[in-house]
Image (cartoon, rainbow, N blue to C red; front, side, top):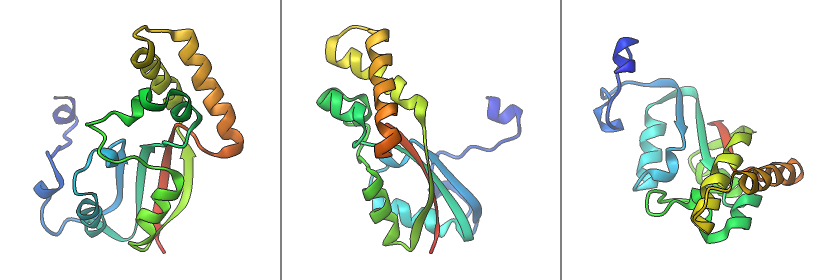
Length: 159
């Protein structure tokens, strides 16, 4: 409804895009991990990207401190909705074989707090705000040196 008010047309999937439409920028905010048939979906994204275009892709990072702390209770595993799980290395490998390189990455520092809050509830059955905040904070502090933030935004361009 808000999209219509702003005259933004939303489509249910990439197949609904007009055949030849290309874009300078394509963004996926916590979408990639949900896509079935990942390789074909990436090929479709690339096909719809203009020459010199940029992909912005945000995904959870299973190498983060909060992922290691919560292990099987880490909310960002989110099985079965999350079909794929990524690390910095896997994102680089996945897209480099399609001729893309990560030109920049940015941490999504608030995600560690949200994911820890959910994870804490999955682990203990209780909404423990203070414990979740503490783990989220420790995750971000750890990531200052490891660069393994709970979620990362990758900015990708063709080599």
